Image (spheres, rainbow over the protein chains, first blue to last red):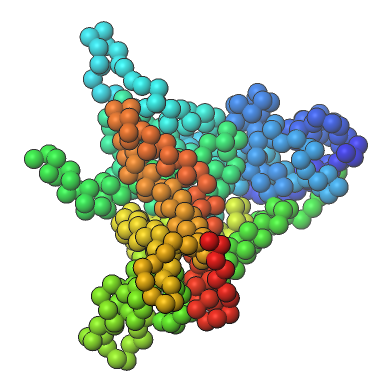
Length: 248
Length: 266
């Protein structure tokens, strides 16, 4: 491992910006966030970077390292080729605020648009419910999400096609899946998933799954099962027929 | 500190990635193209699709045809003379459309053939985008029906594989059990296709993904677990079964043409 590495960091704001190179000492065990902090302390005191836990659990330090959406605190320098400059830039899907900090508030507005958890009437007179571990296991995977929004950043529907008005993105399809598949939940979201949440825009690139720092199998376990439920509700004539006779 | 030029416009292929991101879509492009070209050519041949007890999976079930495997005899008289006839043309659209609408394959060919996107965080050639929201890609939702039809075809292929172990003596008499390399090829084809079909995302939905309380049906719960287990390697099943079905046709074809010899193990 070399003793010094060059980091090509994006400096700018919503109006524009440029990459600037910073050479800084590096050592075993360092992560990209350590190097960025070192540069901030020694060479660029005004460098803006959002961070908090340094343990891959708060989802604050999301950025693009050598073009790959990653958490800076979980990207070890020994995983990177330090013989050439390491590019560090903000998430490109979201508006820039300053340097490595982006405005991710769109995500929080989108989350409010998803129908909340609506449990069935309590199972017991004391107002509590009973459910089996086997039934909640499937949705527990989705609860690992730390809302780093790397999946939103890598999704080409948002990143390249800017479909922010018609598509909620993989993070919120996972959120909807966690609610929709919950054994206590009674709400029906399939129609909205197609119309306002735009699940049909997802063309299954699996990029969201690849970048998830919590290893959530977003596409296979959340989005595709939801697509199948939308087919049940809106496209499949046999399911409609079965439901019709079941109601009779 | 020094400054470097910046590219703000994301043109086709633009990315800050340093890895060889183009290798995977290129491999998928060549592999799928090769298969499509070979399968189309083989489907139109209409000959050399049987050898002894073996029947090429591209031609099974042989609904109308000239071989002893045919269900209803030769080509129907009503078939227009100016149209090329091959038994494969009646059956091959089912597995072909199943693969076209398969969730894994969709993701793969959108990237490799349509560059939508070419790879993660790589610039695209087009600005417009409809996804699977509107015609024609909304038709991908027919996938589950093609799954059911394909399972039916798989059952027939399983029977063909079984029949591939029963050889007729040249001097007549009842067929006798034997194992040829072709018997193993047809059996491997069925096993890999079964892994692909039974691990399909639509199968997973039917097997239990459509309900929220799996624990109410212990059998359904186990079925869902089995399908999910296969589904985790869906890509591997998809590619291995694609290769094997093409190879099985090639094997039968070359044996029938006398190019390859079918070695008898037993």
